[in-house]
Image 1 (tube, rainbow, N blue to C red):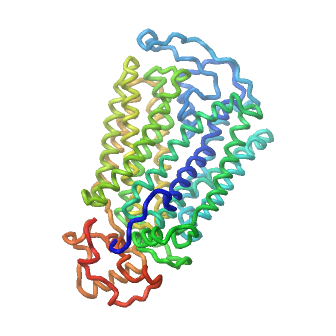
Image 2: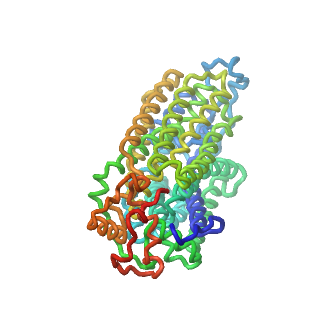
Image 3: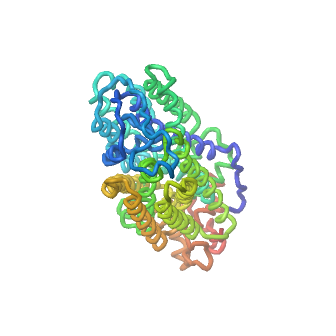
Length: 564
C-alpha cells in the first residue's frame, strides 16, 4: 500500500478487538459447559459402579457427551477407578474396585433428564447461526453480540434459581442460552471482516479461535474446584461467577470496541487508514447497508468448498472433544481420576498451534512466498491429512503404550489447530463484508455434522473395544481427507466479484471499459480483486474522505495489481 505505513500491532485497536473476541469466546464457552461440571454436584447419585457401556450411553444423546469433554471423571454417577475386563497388571491399575463416596446433591435427575438438559443448549444454538450473521451485517456485530452475551449472562445467573424451582425452567433457560450464544461466531466474523487487514487475517482470527480451547480447559478445571470449595452448595457458585464474569466482559466490550475503524473514537489516524485501505472500505462513519447477495453466496463454489472443509474438521473435533475421555478410559485404561490433566493436554496443544499457524500463514503471504489461495490449501491439507494419520495411529496403541497414545492425540489436535489458517479464514478472503452471514451458514452445517458424528460414535462402539474405536477413527480420517480434497480443488483466495465494495466495483468497471484484464495472473498475485482492494489507499478516496469517482483518479492496472 504505497504512501500508507503499516500500523504497529502492539497497543493497536485491531488487536485490542481480537483480545476481547478471545475473552468473548472464553466466557461464551464458560456459559456453554459450566452445567456439564456443575451437574455432577447438583444430582444425587447412588453408590454404584459405572461400566463403559454406561459412559457410552451418555454419548448417544447427541451432544450430551460434553459432560466430560475435558475431565471425563465428572459424571453424575459414581465412577470406579477402572472397569473390569482390562488387563490390570499390564496397564498398572491397582485400585480397581475402589468406589467413590455418595454424592449428596440436591436433585434426583435421571440420566435422560441430564442428557436433555445438556442438549437443550445445542437445540437453541443451531437456530441462530444464519440469523445472527444477518443481524450482525445489518445492525453491527458489536451491538448484536453484546446484547446476546448479556442474555447469556442473565440466563446463567438465573440457572440456580430455576433449578430449585422446576427442571422445566432449566430446559427453557438452556434453550435461551443456546439461542443467544449462537450469534457469537457470525458476529466475530462480521466485525473482523471490517477490522482485519488482508495480511493479518490469519493471525487475528487464529488468536480469537484459541478462546474455544482455553475456555474449555479453564471452565472445567475451575468449575471442578468451585464444586468442592465454592459457595451455595458449591455448584451454585459455578453459575454465579460465570454470569458475573460474562457481564463484566459485556461492559468492557461496549466501552472499548466499535463496529468499524471509521466509527472508533480512540483509533489512531495511521491505523484507521491502514485498515480501511487494506480492506477497501471508506472513512464514512455511517456506511450504506448493502443487500446480502444470498443467491451469489449459495451458488459460490469456493464458499461451499470452505463449508465442506469446516464440516470435515468439526466432525473430527466433536468426536475428540466429547468422546476422547471415553476412548482413553475404555481402550487406554486410563484412571482419569488421577490423570485428568492428560485429557485436557491435547486441547492446550491445539490452542498453541492455532496461534502459531496464524502467524506463520500471514508471514508467508506477506513475504510473497505463497499466494493466499495456496497458503489456505497448505494449512488445510496439513490439518486434515496430519490429523487423519495421527487419529488412525492412536487407534492401534494399547494401554501399555500410554505415553505414545497421549503424544499422538496431542499431535492430532495440533494438526487440527492448523485449520485456523485454512478454511477458518476463507470467508474473509472471499467476501469480508458478508463474512458474518457466510459464517452462520457454514457453522450451521458444521454443527449438524458434529451432532451426526456423536451418533456415529454411539453406533460404532456398542462394546467399547479397541477394534470398534478403530472404525470410528477410520471414518474420521476418511471425512477429513474428503474435506481436504474438495477444499483443495475448489477454494479460492481472492475477493469474489459479487462481494466487492462499491468503490472496487467502479475500479473493475473502469478497467473493463479500457479493456484491461484485471484477473491476469501474470500481473496480479492470485489474479484477484483483493489485490485491488489492498491498494485502494492509492486512490484519493482515502486521502480526501470522499469518493469523487473521476476516472482520472485511477491508477493503471499494472500500478494497482502488485504481487504480495
